[in-house]
Image (cartoon, rainbow, N blue to C red):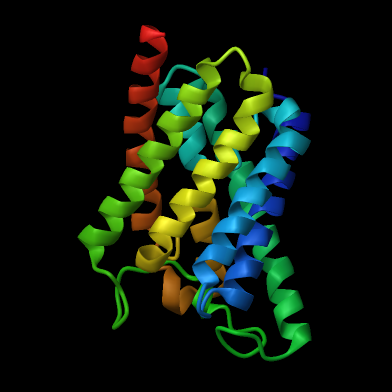
Length: 230
C-alpha cells in the first residue's frame, strides 16, 4: 500500500544518497582518483539509505529502480509516479543543500563556491562523450544494476545481503561510468544538478532519464526471468 510514510522515506533516502554523491563530485570529482572517491561514497550512501529507510519504502531512491521493479512485476505501476516524484524532490533538496554549503565554503575543486556546473551529467560540449556513447553506457549500467538487485533478492539471505549487494554494484557502476557521464545512473540525481545549473544541464537532461529508464526496464525483464528460473 502506498503511504505517506513510504513517500517520506523515499524522499529522505534519496536526499541522503544524492547529497553524498553531489558533495563528493563537487570536492573530489575533478582530482586524480576522484572517480574512486565518488564511487565509494555512492556505495556507502546507498547501503546506508537502504538500511535506514528501506524497511519503510523498499529502498528505491532512484526512478530507474522504481520503473525497473515495475517491469519485473515487483512493484505496482500505479504507485510508480508518487515514488518518482518523491525521489526527484529529495534529489533537488539534496542539491540545494550542497549548493548552500558550496557557496558558504568558498572555492572548491570543480569551480568557485556556488558554481555547480561540474555536477551536471552531459553528453554535449567540448568534453562531452557524445549522445550515443553516453546513452548506451547509462542504459547498460542501469540494466546491470536492476538485474543484479533482483538476482540478489532471490537469495534466502536477501534481507541481510541485499543492501550490501546493491551498494557494491552501484559503487562499481559509478566508477565505470564516471569518465563518460559523471555517473548519472539515477534520473533524480541528474535532474537535481541540472536544475541548479540549467544552462549546462537542462538541454541534455532528457538522455539521463531516457537511457537509465530504458536500461532499467530491460534489467527488470532480465531479473524477472532469472527469478522465474530460480
